[in-house]
Length: 399
Image 1 (tube, rainbow, N blue to C red):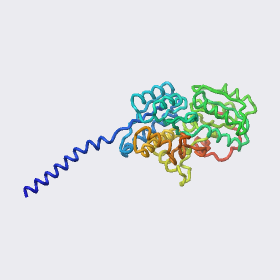
Image 2: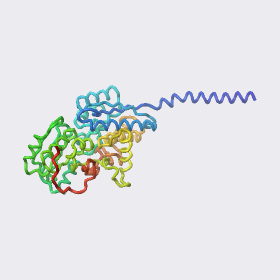
Image 3: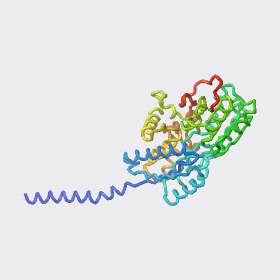
Image 4: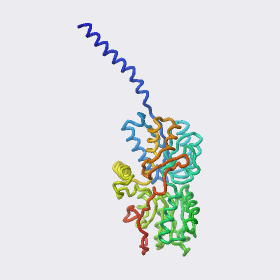
């Protein structure tokens, strides 16, 4: 009996010792993966970077709470660029050279992204930009991807609506930042093939507080049938207000950089009837139950609004897509090796995001088609789907 007891004790002791020896090995296998983010939480593009930063932080918390990716947790390092390319450059170098991050999410703006594109390429570091300019991914750079839809698709959607409305002669207004200038280039390049003539074009300062002089200049051209206002900065709302204050009832088209209700609030009553292309996140609640994006859009929108007490925006969606595409690629790669993860992103097909259904390829580092855009308008201060060209009517002057 004593011999049996000792044998049992011995077995238990050996078993416990085996667990003790194996435990450090198991723990050592799990690690923390550093992911950087350069976002404009402050500055002129804070309506973009703020929602992006909040979204990415929220998603990383959820991912880690569920056990991470392949057993590894994500260590998120967020840098506030203040909407300036100079800071973005400094932070990109720091994240790549000092922090050794797997990837950088952002920046929020096209100008910042173009400033660090080559830095990420040289550092062989994945960049998932939240900015829209097509030149971010055209020409293709091996390590550079972006989540917003192409601005050329936005231009085509706008021009297609103009064709339906019988509009042929337009004015173009653009902010003097990277997004504004890239969009102006696309508007000018695509106009001839769509039967649109740009009869007036002006660039305004992104920090402007009054653009009535610019509006007066283009309003003097009596040929203009519509205005395209291409911008992501707060001044885009000032343009709209100044147009209506001048008593000009011309149809106004905005870019996909208008997808935050804060811009509507800034423009006030002048925002009513604006037309612009955007992803379907802004109208998620009106989508049919069987729409492929419905579940993702409503889940993200609800979680964001519950946590931060503000409506989800297009820009927060770009942040969502960036972190979730990276997470999905890490899962598919079964690794945090940068080359394997990069390859997994480049071959990711059928990924349902907020901006659309992503189908990446070696020739396409955006992965979205023109159908990722819907045409929206503003009605009673809210975003709704745009269906029919409006009947032009007198619009009250905004005081």
